[in-house]
Length: 355
Ligand SMILES: [Mn+2]
Image (cartoon, rainbow, N blue to C red; front, side):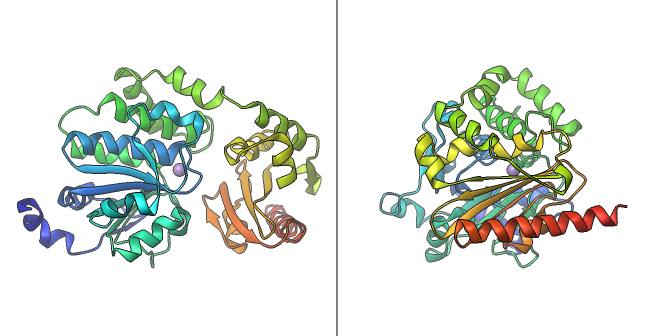
């Protein structure tokens, strides 16, 4: 409590480092002032969101914070290697209410859009909880968070956690934190292959190896752990790819029927759009995933010639320049037509501009 009073003057002002140079010491003041801290990430979490949570969790635990990781979605099975201490909890209002109502700070990672924490937003609002957004997705200046910390140049949110731990700790980063950070960097760079892979990613990887992280085990857990359902689904979609604009755009559909026939879960669909992008000549890959009769999730991946977050934005979503998505209301037939047409128009225009 003494610490909190001391810091009052600084944390009164809400931070907004919206892709401006981040003063991690200010972030440190905000985190230091909180005793009970909840960490969270977006629904259907990926290695970056989960790894960032894990990376910060072990640090906060070590310094004696009352910290818990509470996500809207359950932990995907192939990330259970991060959960040897059962640190990931799936939000259940009745179960968590008592603890959540007295949370001093909710730190949200990699979210892209606040609504992607789903019912956790309601809990935050109903208890008037303070929030700290740590993300490498673009956010508007009129963001809904108490504090906003955005670095678009970060390859992964996990890199930002690494930055923070550099100034927050005097001891070296612990191996368990590094396991999370490595998972974040590895998955968001497509295993150090995508254009966002920079020197820092490799520097972080070196430190992870030095701290004893078994990088090959993490690789195998994430990339060599496909379910048979996933393979069946993959076979189906690869035989039904559609090409537009001389093959610059490749798109595919995953229907609920295909999911049912393959006995597949949402996690089985991860990475399909990246895979389609690997085809020779394909600049943009697009997945249309039928969520239910009322809406579809769409996902874009670009090799680099054409931005896709503008297309996603025009359809109500957002994301990175070369990796973006949206949830579009409407039947599969309607969404397919709207999305494919918008993509063709946008890419065609960009092709003409570059002539
Ligand atoms: Mn990310």
